[in-house]
Amino acid sequence: LAKTTQPISMDSYEGQEVNITCSHNNIATNDYITWYQQFPSQGPRFIIQGYKTKVTNEVASLFIPADRKSSTLSLPRVSLSDTAVYYCLAGGSSNTGKLIFGQGTTLQVKP
Amino acid sequence: DVKVTQSSRYLVKRTGEKVFLECVQDMDHENMFWYRQDPGLGLRLIYFSYDVKMKEKGDIPEGYSVSREKKERFSLILESASTNQTSMYLCASSSLAGGTYNEQFFGPGTRLTVL
Image 1 (cartoon, rainbow over the protein chains, first blue to last red):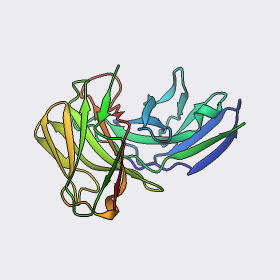
Image 2 (cartoon, one colour; image 1 turned 90 degrees about the vertical axis):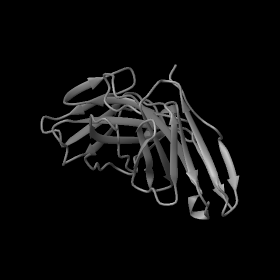
Image 3 (tube, rainbow over the protein chains, first blue to last red; image 1 turned 30 degrees about the horizontal axis):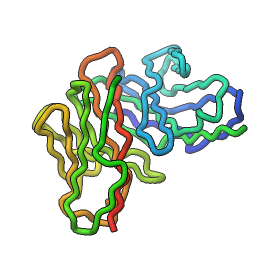
């Protein structure tokens, strides 16, 4: 389970693209990179996962360079409802499914 | 639809009381987890279980115990509640199988206040 580092907070405005970068220098060969989103008074929810290059779904894109020591979550055209805490995790498949959550990045979207 | 439920959204207890937090999942998941979340500290793993009657300590197990008698239910027990256990408690579950590695599904959380 690799330790991850991400900014504590970010501000953005509605309609902008937001990129949150996460550092995971000690990522292991079998580790996946996963991002969760947490709204106030709710549990985190999975938004995207990748191993290398680029992954895109209906919510976000995830960019992972060849060395895999960092990754960038990209949220296109954010709205006020994207205000949340975003967690970056790096971990491999295991029977226990254990993950380590850091402090996350608090994204504040302003009108 | 995937569902993890927790027995209470809000709970107020007194110091020294025994507290039970219940979590139930309906997805037939093998893995279940208990976290606590405090401002500035993120989510910290208390205990997890990868099978019925199996448990492993997480990062902060002191003052807590767990019970998993049935696959769908994972209980967190505070044997003698203390004020420093005032926190948000989150339960999660995940499957061994599936295309997304270790995706965890979370309950809504229980906000416990110990007076």
